[in-house]
Amino acid sequence: MKLFALPIRFGIAVSGSLIAYFLLLSLFNLHTNIFYSLFNGVITGFGIYEAIKYFRIKEGPAFNYGKGFTAGIVTGFVGTLIFTIFFAFYATEINLGFLDELSKVWFRDYNTSEGIVFFTVAIMGFATTLVLTLSFMQLFKTSNNLKRKSV
Image (cartoon, rainbow, N blue to C red; front, top):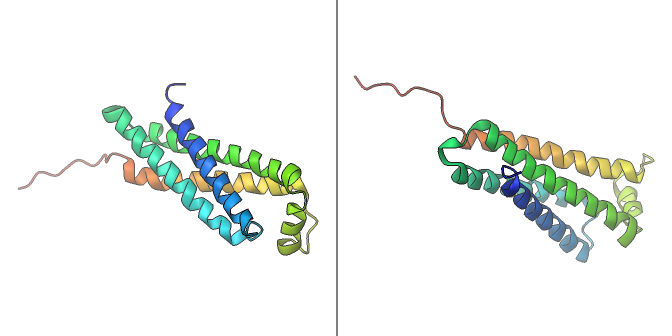
C-alpha cells in the first residue's frame, strides 16, 4: 500500500480537478458540449506527469519503468473512477435532464442508455490514462544505452 499512497493522492486531486472543471462548465451550461471534454485530457495528463515526477524523486535510484508506469496508471484510474462515479451521480440525481439534453445534441440517431454514457466516460478516461502514461514514461525512464568512449 505504501507504493500506491502517492499515486492515489494524485488521483484524488485529478478527480477533484475534473469535477471542478465539469461544475464550472455546468454553471455556463457548456457541460453538454463534448468538445470541452478535451481539456479533461490536459487535467489528467498534468496529474499523471506530476505523480510520476514526484514518485521518481521519492524513489530515487530505485525508480524503474515498472514503478513509474504503475504510478501513472494508478493515478489515472483512481481519478477516472471517482469522476465517473460523480458523473453518474450528477446525471441521475442532481440534473435529471442532463442525459436527455446530451443525447438530444449528440446522439440523435441512436437510442442510448445511461449505462452506455457512463461506460463511455470511464473508457475515455482509462484510454487517456494509458496513452499519457506510456508517453510520459518515455521522458522519465532511464536509458539502457551504454555511453561510448571518446576516441
